[in-house]
Length: 304
Image (tube, rainbow, N blue to C red; front, side):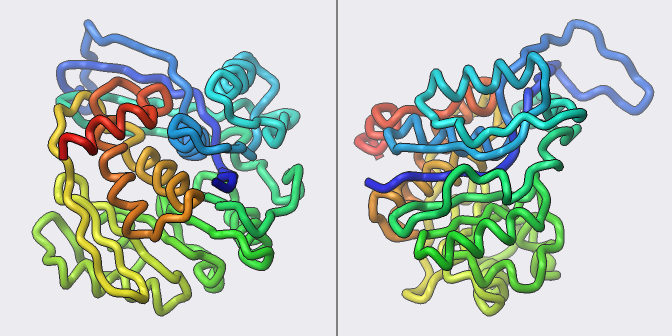
């Protein structure tokens, strides 16, 4: 099995649980608060490592207590954090997450994440590795890192979230692009919603393939996922589960996908495994702390 290297954000998630979301100008009492490690990059690294895959994290934090907590959490989960760089000035990233009625809304103060640069990589990409990136760190760094990884022969995974318009040539360095329904709509200028047909989703995925991505995976929540690649279209069913908190489910999918790609699976095979892993993650509160182990995913697969 090869190594997964995740380049991306590290945040402390401030999770506020309430019975419902307040209306504009309204104050609700009786909520509960938790401080949990998060950030799309960290979440994806933890998801990969908990499945038994050698995993490294590369990113930026501030000089504060949250940074120490995040580094400790990575170490406790056997993630190599030598590539996590402390920057002067900005604070470690923070995400305020409002959880109500089984869903969430998120506001992020990026802080040190926006000071991450490709020059912070401790090692050059290697051919046998899987490199993962998202859009919570500067696009220039993401473009350079994925280009270097692609040139080295590593497999590359890009999670186009939260969506922002990428440089024109970025997708040419991407082996597997992963994005949800909303992000796919934004990326392609098509109108997609929960009622969109499989053919409409596939057509949108092919727009990104024409721009360079060799495979595109659309995650569709309760509808499962669709994988579009040179070998055709694969529809991945969703696994029924009792939802507690959807925060980090997409990150779990990406991290689990990368871990299976590192084990030599195809994008479609890896996506099936990742869908099961994501169904496990939503049964617990939080993002990174809710990532399942390989044993948990295997047990659910056995019941499928």
